[in-house]
Picture 1 (tube, helix red, strand yellow):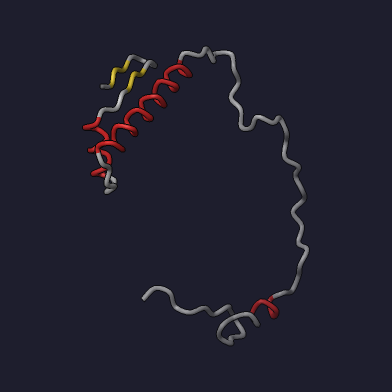
Picture 2: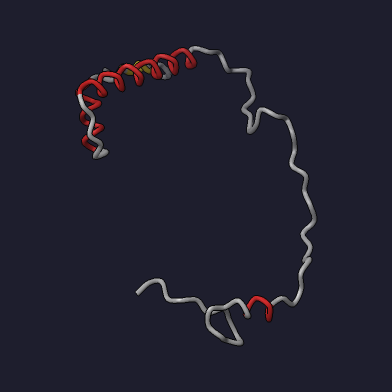
Length: 105
């Protein structure tokens, strides 16, 4: 049963839904395991409903729990003229470019 208000959801999973999902995902689930899954999923949904009750109007969104900023470094070339060394690693010899075996026929 799914009941939906504007931001208030109440979900519960029954055995029929578990069987339907297992059929769609091509996973074999017996009745005992389906009952356990239904119970587990319903407890997860109850926890989510409790989280939805929290007042978060004045809470700023976070990208990380640790308030740090990334250190930036300058863009500079450290290795120059490595073309010959790179071309030597090619499986086939070629002076102009790196040759690899054909992957798509």
